[in-house]
Amino acid sequence: INQPDLGDVVDEHVAAEVTMRDARELHPPASLDALGFALQSWPTKCDDFEDDDAVVATYYGEMMDLVKAASGAERVFIFDHTVRESGNTNLNAAAGGSAAPVPRVHCDYTASGAPRRLQQLGAEGIYSRLRGRVLTPEDVEELAAGRFAFINVWRSIDDSHPVMQQPLAVCDEKSVAEEDRFTYELRFPDRTGENYSLRHSRAHRWYYFPRQTKDECLVFKVYDKREDGPRFVFHTAFSDPSSPADAPPRRSIEVRAIAFFDPPELEEPVDAMRTAQGEPFAGR
Image 1 (spheres, rainbow, N blue to C red):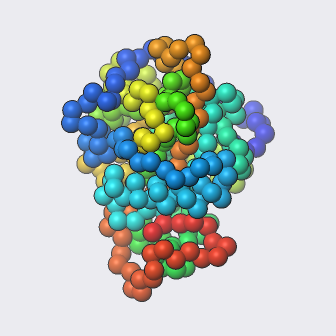
Image 2: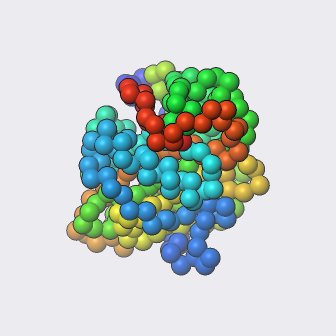
């Protein structure tokens, strides 16, 4: 990723037909605690998703509030986002650009990879709006000692149409046997990440939300430190055979967040809306 293919790794995946269930028909509705995913109505005031600065300034704050509401977390840090369009072929986006949907079943983090990613982000510098400064290594260790979860939020950014091709599907983790998942390496220029891939099984229960609109957000966990509930929600874009031949391209944005559920108390709270000049937008 973000470097030429050196030919030293192999990437193989096999397409499989599955039964796709309508998640809108679930009663009670899907929730993060029960299934690891949920659909939330959450309109946005961001009007230019191609402007990274506008996304950070407007959209990140909206998504912090959404993740808190959906998960019950006390603090949230948004650290990344990607815009995707179905006409693209590149899976990674440059600044201000877009990438293609990912048609491979995966979960973004592993049991060991998620804590390591939190430490890496801490080393890069997390600016806390609540503390009014960059978190120290000791601050990050305190946060890591409590419960935290990596949570993604996915929405369409098409003002005129619902999602009609390449929708996002999520898998009920209770249907995934531990032996079905395996580690998949992501080679970056400066680090090697890990996520989970999945061996196909007829036992897997897949869901999607048909014709998802711009005001609807699909929220799902890709890691949770707490072990007595959903932790790793596998997901993928998929080819929907019911899509009309003239379906408009899918345009979407996903943000990646870390939710902290029992963070240490602040010694010297500052104005929650304070922003540091020149510092990256961070958690509150």
